Amino acid sequence: MTEAWGLKSLGFAFCVGELPRNNVPLYNPKSPSMKMAHILLVEDNEGDIVLTLDAFEESKIKTDISVVRNGQEAIDFLFQQGDYKDARRPDLILLDINIPILNGLEVLQKIKQNETLKKIPVIILTTSDHQRDINNAYENHTNSYVTKPIEMDDFLKVILKIEEFWLELCKLAEN
Image (cartoon, rainbow, N blue to C red; front, side, top):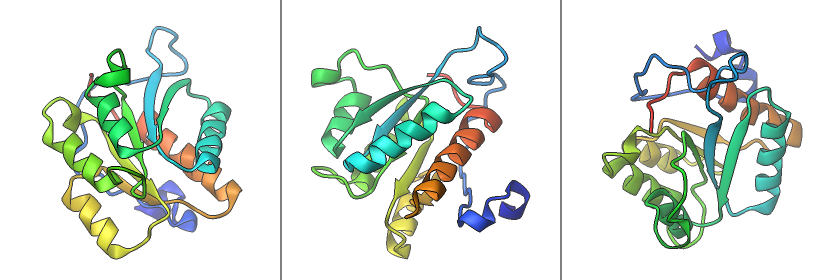
């Protein structure tokens, strides 16, 4: 399957699990009436934040990206608590495992236990390639698990592939 997507060379595979089923595309760049995709990036590494934002800026899909830097901020954002009472629900979540306060797996568990939030695709985007982390993520219903490449060009390609798959090809549930 990864050969068909041209992703094997990047070591990138999609294991989706439960995809939301909705026949309305989230964003079609040819249709200005479609809404802009909202992505929540949960990442504490400033370099990875900058790279991710740069990659989405270069893309053909217009996105609105919110950034939180630890697990508690992610929970507050998603449950619209504290400083995030007016936060817009994301269409897609990019979640690092190795984040402070609550780790990414704890955040993932809380997301997937909530009836409203569990429909939002969560992509684990992390430096960890430990099989234990991968297994734990899928046991907690992550939609895909991606190990961050070390090289900047490869990192940008991965972000663009995530965007292409999740925001162009997939049909996402409405918030």
